[in-house]
Length: 443
Image 1 (cartoon, rainbow, N blue to C red):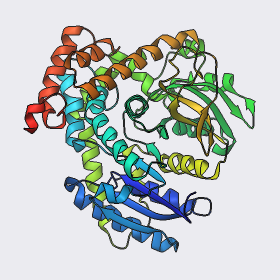
Image 2: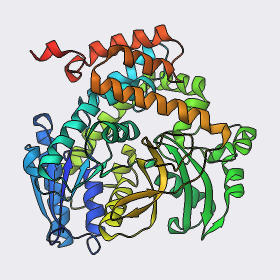
Image 3: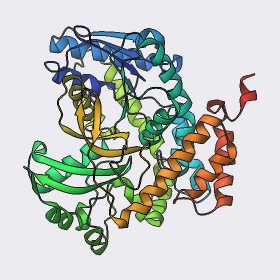
Image 4: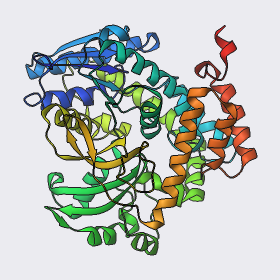
């Protein structure tokens, strides 16, 4: 049985996103009585942890709620007897992301945080750390739920399902909720009236149908997004419009990340131009983060500042706290999450992670079976799933050849020799965060 009130441990507690999460816990306190919130970080994140942690305490004090906030660099202390563990960290910090984005561009390949070479290397750095956290959880809070927001969320969830003993894991992303909000705006209705049937993978998810008050409005929405001015209704990937014929014929809602696959050349050129003019997205985010932390330091600030939405994490707390609340209260509402497929999508292995609309229960998400994906999108989803599985295997085994194979089969990579050249450059650049490939570095 859960104790009176809930203990939540947040790994990567010094993140600029933490005020979003705290705001969510405050807003849902009646349903989700959080007793202790433990914010954990590493030595390099100590200063940010203290700044964010103090803001969290001020927010909770202003709300008049009895939530204790603890700041620590000791992960094990935070995990002991936790009910929920949330993960939102970045191995190598934003400096590593900048390399993920810059190095592929030097080879004429898209550099992006969670897709292609950037997604691969983020996974290679992150998965061993997540599996380490899972081992600690087995020992210190075996009944806890792991709620993972760390990108690449699909690949990380895949790795936990395959290579750890933690089966109470759910991956979460703010793209589906962003799509819901965007559709609500297009239709001029409140978000609470919208439901989208989501299926696919993280950052490769499709909306198979759209309902308002339970009535399908898909055809109308498809028509609206076939207008180039409406094509990207989620922040941080500004829309290059779709060809109307393509959208109408595809007949499902795309997510913003599909731009990288269906508009490879345009998106590569756009990214190259932006990197030359104002730096990579990581460098832009570094500036935003510096400004945010200056705001957070203000001892009179007692709420999440509106500038946080520019960081790309809009609706993150809504999605996160909604999910935790629904597990805790056995709400049985429908939410899009990353979970084990269990036959919900026919052409994806049962034991793989998928991003899919699921009924959220006290026993976790129950994915809603859709049969199969439309033939037009099925192949791309399977290709990305193969990439995720091989990447997770390379991350766990430190198998260099498997990493080359994973990147070669990714549709953003033009050839095997380019894949190998990128892998070699990025392995060298990230050496300190890839001990599984460079065991001698530690000796």
